[in-house]
Length: 451
Image 1 (cartoon, rainbow, N blue to C red):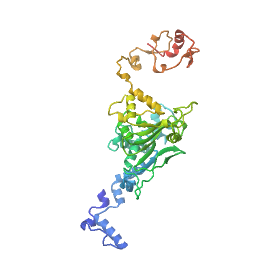
Image 2 (tube, rainbow, N blue to C red):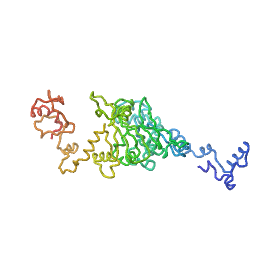
Image 3 (cartoon, rainbow, N blue to C red):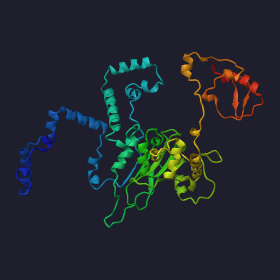
Image 4 (cartoon, helix red, strand yellow):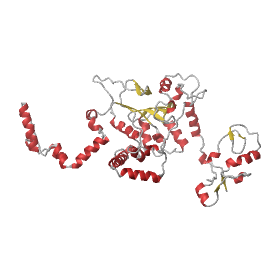
């Protein structure tokens, strides 16, 4: 195909390397030389090739529809110079999943409006709708399958091997690969200004500038890769490249399109290096970080909520935790991943201040509960116990604790229970009843299971 587009042997090659246009000095002569070159090398017109090879047209159509983007081609001059010196972005927080109701809802709103429809009705309506044409449906299915296969390819994304596919993770890796290894340097040898701290405010990422000599990447993205069970290798690379990590919870609805409990991070990445990074968690507004970086350390340390039961926005230098090898060791030790190969990829803890990290370090240094020899029993397994007839589901009054099987939701901390009548519980108030009376009146609500 390339031979058909570019030709077989150029006139310059046939001349032993002498330039094609060396003897042609006027525009007319250059035009004639170009036409001769096309004829001599048997170059084919693009339109002719598209007509002869229909699959090329299909490829062009798919590329236009899916919006394929080739970084090395679109930014070829930058990559010739080494890559990007500064990258800022908020990549998509999307997993490439096939969501059939949303695709079908484009043609029939019923699929998007009805919550948990009956399977039979769903299949009947889908079959009826697809009878009128399924080209768009199949194109959507093929697109999701193609994207999933590409983003999950271990050769294309070796750092993300065995990690759940998510577009933001691919963008992290893509930004690392697109980054320059040298940084911005002007002609007189002075470094350009880049970024000291990334913050989110007024609907946009903003940065503060200092002089740097190495590339930086500033991204706003979720942090699920930090807690994922099988993402140890990816976390190791993340920790080696991270300079700053600020973990936020969306309680103040800075992002209105996601829930208030959703977490996300603003992270500054650089070239791989040892030495650790700065981290802060339990943040709700970027202004807290700006002021904490300049705080003198005086006053009480903030937590998750303040004395008025509001989200704690107070700045303090203790919010900034230095994540080094000792910190990673404490995380790994608490998580039970203290092997030598696991420490550098330990899952982090979202701690509000340095004192919390100090407590965690003390706990990590204490003997492990797992080192104590003890006997335990898993208790009843609900499904198998029912099949074997050990448990039956029924409402019943019981007078002995031995006749009660407590489930997880029944076990919680409370100063006491005040029962006004059977089934009415007011948790948290002191009980005036004795143990036997409390047991008798509470049994109906507690004893869902009876052996």
